[in-house]
Image 1 (tube, rainbow, N blue to C red):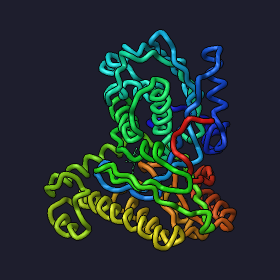
Image 2 (cartoon, rainbow, N blue to C red; image 1 turned 135 degrees about the vertical axis):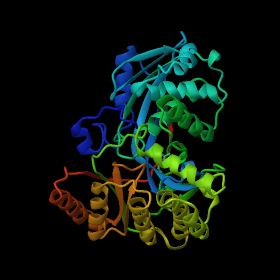
Image 3 (tube, helix red, strand yellow; image 1 turned 60 degrees about the vertical axis):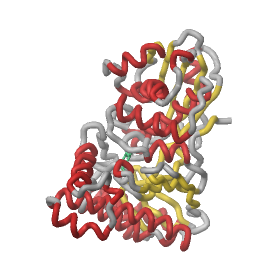
Image 4 (cartoon, rainbow, N blue to C red; image 1 turned 45 degrees about the vertical axis):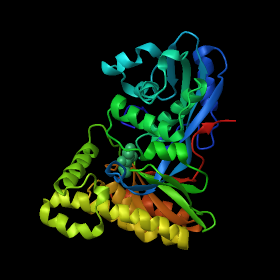
Length: 410
Ligand code: GLA
């Protein structure tokens, strides 16, 4: 998320809100009752995601392999008869209200701001993808989340996906999950102002238990790839450095521009169209920085394909070297890591992780480590020790489990 979801230091340390990973919309239901005095018609929830591999490849029309995690955003919702949209959350001020009929004007005037730009931006974007907003009744939405903000775990996509699904079902719209992913991305790009790709919303909407979503970001063809972490005796640890990023104004936009400049200079529609064998020519034609940005993306696409192949042929324990290589590429070529992420990755490797890398947009956020279950205590201690030795604040460390995508809660 782009810094608009306030979060207390205590929550950051815990790696989530008080609701915790197992919450079932209780916070959202209670908040809904506070807002309206009545009960919600239903609760819809959508997960954050971890990107296993494939970083900064989505907006280059390449490949990604994220999975949905057991940290969710819940939206308790009910329709209203008067055409008003009211949103309230446990992490922002509010309630904020706007007539549905005003969404287009408010969006054009740049009036969708702060945390409510996410849910209101989604409502607006539904109209951009074919929903007839003049025919919908309005809604009350109460939102609660256990996805840590700014950790690179897509708290924003979790809000967008949960709201998109809730409004689609409440309002009886006929939009596929693939379209809802585009709705969330449009809200993020045009209402929030972060020039992000389609990966996060796709993971949140298409994820399945124990599996990753292998997405071709050009065709948007998605395949579910079983991960089998538990069978392999592995767990996925998140090490949230506490260093916070800012996608809308930060280096993310700059990296995207470099990739587009590189593709243009090399005469291809997108970096997806280059192979590793094209890099020699790229090195001759491009300045050093643009070349290294291009090299990261081209080699990362290859690593995603290799990871999918390796998972299928040899299982999760065999993908470590690909995760490690991805981190090195982001650290040295794409230059989006920070010292805290590098320390987390090195300590995790030293403590027996089979592979580790930073995950998400970079410039802070979290690292992931794939680690034998029995090595988790040693890994946590080693990471704590390494952070203390560098004078860094202790990171939040927790396990995430590949989980179901967005759904209506029972
Ligand atoms: C953020 C964006 C995604 C993707 C990643 C980097 O999470 O939202 O679209 O670009 O960064 O892989």
